Amino acid sequence: MAVVPLAHREAGAGTPLVLLHAFPLSSAMWLEQRELLGSRCRVITPDQRGFGGSELGADEPSLGACADDVIALLDGLGLDRVVLGGLSMGGYVAMELLRRAPERVSALLLADTKASADPPEAREGRMRTAEAVERDGTGPLAETMLPLLLGATTLETRAAVAGRVRGLVAAAPPAAVAWASRAMAARPDSFDVLRATEVPALVVVGDEDALSPVAQAQEMVDALPQGRLAVVPGAGHLSAVEDPPAFAAAVRAFLADLA
Ligand code: MLT
Image 1 (cartoon, protein in one colour):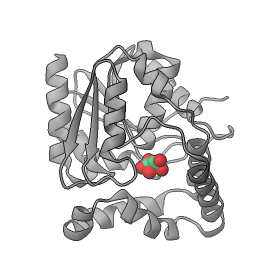
Image 2 (tube, helix red, strand yellow; image 1 turned 120 degrees about the vertical axis):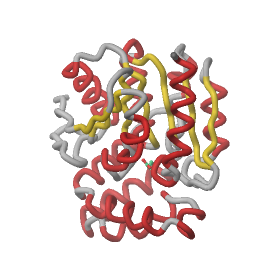
Image 3 (cartoon, helix red, strand yellow; image 1 turned 30 degrees about the vertical axis):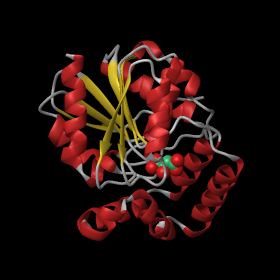
């Protein structure tokens, strides 16, 4: 496997906090978190391979390759240990990184994600998504994904958020979307990784998250030896984008306790 150099955006100084984005978005989704958390720590938000400013590379689809890219980014930045965070697909990549290099993680933030592998029908759905995107581009995907990514409250009351997320999905390169779909389909169950995670961990979830519901967040908390849960009311799967201040408040409280 060949590491892909990751484009990334940064804000702030101090404790490094790496935030890995959801599918099929980019580091642009962390705009508000860079602003809100940048006064508290050094927020580093990479574009995962194929998305934003990062090349896709030529490897077979696997989230392990994405985790290796992040490890290489940390090496390049001279960072031995970071607070590692990821939302949804970003969480899957964070768990892969933990599997490979737990010594690089001083604390863990998992948002709107799950530790289980996909059941067969979900895996088949991802394969169909990959083929559809290669055939039709990402425009139709934006329409089907929006009601899954956003909670009912956002869909009803936050038109600007919905417009922005629609634009981010439509801007994703089809080849990257197809690759990431196949990579997510191949991911393993990660409960073993969580059970072995000795560092403090925060699990954040929107209470309207239909893709990774609160019950799955609670399962991760139960598996983590030092896990705690924060629920963002009135937010769906993209809790950090739907209610940025509430998400940032949960992270700030977690970081304050680490200090
Ligand atoms: C994401 O938001 O990253 C995706 O919805 C994750 C998934 O499809 O499992």
